[in-house]
Image (cartoon, rainbow, N blue to C red; front, top):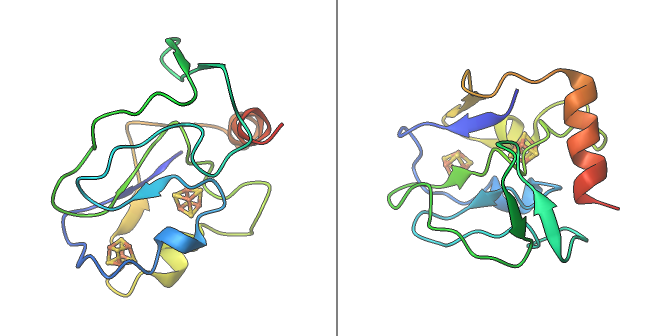
Length: 115
Ligand code: SF4
Ligand code: SF4
């Protein structure tokens, strides 16, 4: 499943550069599929909606860092464990029960993001 950041986040910024999918954004910053990926053109989100990879979306959080579920692969295909959780000093990167995915699904997502 995807990882999420709780409101315990202290905005230290340590997690953001560690994410291989650029799934982590500072609060208040708009996100896009194409940031840190090799995708351009149409991209199908987990909910089935097709969007342009360059489209910028409203921030998921304005107060603390946040993770885009459509871009989080739990680091599958890159690292043994979620890197954000490994570096977070306050342990606020936790599994997101809203997005339960198998390892195969996470690896497929990784392949989709890095053609
Ligand atoms: Fe990025 Fe990995 Fe954290 Fe997901 S688990 S947000 S892919 S660092
Ligand atoms: Fe927040 Fe943890 Fe990321 Fe620091 S490492 S910005 S405390 S989620």
